Length: 395
Image (cartoon, rainbow, N blue to C red; front, top):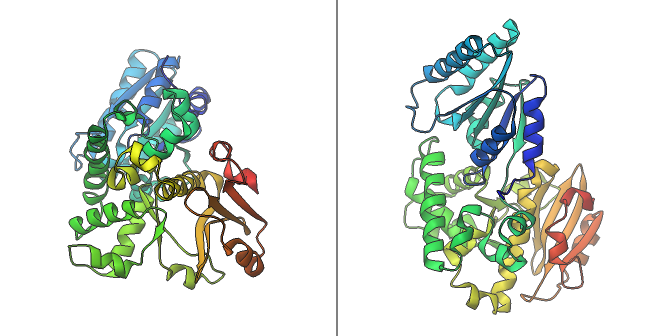
């Protein structure tokens, strides 16, 4: 039986409800957006029309109008009172949001019941006008990286499998062959995400520098490294400002984040040394891992992988849960993750074989008085349980 992601029911319900808003399915590459919409269309009883902008000339801005007009004509000739129009990879067309706004408003004025579902990269869709041209006209359904629960349900994975190999469903069948698995992650997932979704659509003046920063950041996931020191490890010339802007773009694409240090002063947060954090642990393993058998039995290495998995899980739910993720460190005292939601603060310390508890939690409590201070792992919330929680429920 084909696995259906939790968002399946939500998308199907919105497809069957009266036409009100444009429905936007957004998320990073290879998390199943196209597969999900195919599954929904297979069960939807309403006539539907599916188009994919992948391969269409990005300057062919009239393409959207043509397929829209074709859909209207088919609706009329087939005497369909309502229908669904789905456009995949729509963000690849220049000025797509302007054309969508024009055609959507035209259907609204004529009371045509043509419902629109569009799919694409969340960062690129927002950057290219979703929040400007289409403000007030759309609802967003986010599809993030696959969770432990999903990989377990779909592929029978264990907690250790998910911590080490991350949550890309397309790679699940390759984990017995490490060389092949790494090749797939780097060439079929990472390269297209950077070369097509970022470099070709953003003002990236030093593409080689961005690629190097991404790979370096993946190897440092769950660790701190100043941008100045990062520059010293990169071959292409650049400056701290350039690296900072590239890191923010990678963050917007749900690939790699540079977590800021928690502080009451916004300026101090911005100027802090970043703690690198992948959104999917597959990225840490692809660029840093040796083999599951070797890395799993080393307590220090495995502890690093666990902390990175916790960070990835926190980041994956941040937008939907309405919270922000930070770290805290003052000299030798540190707290792995600080969560802030609606003014409330929570401190999370990851305890595994990598190290015992330090005095960071108590020092942080004295300084900031968080609502909760929790340990994840040994003597705290078990990892199996934590990775199935909604983080916002901890508040």
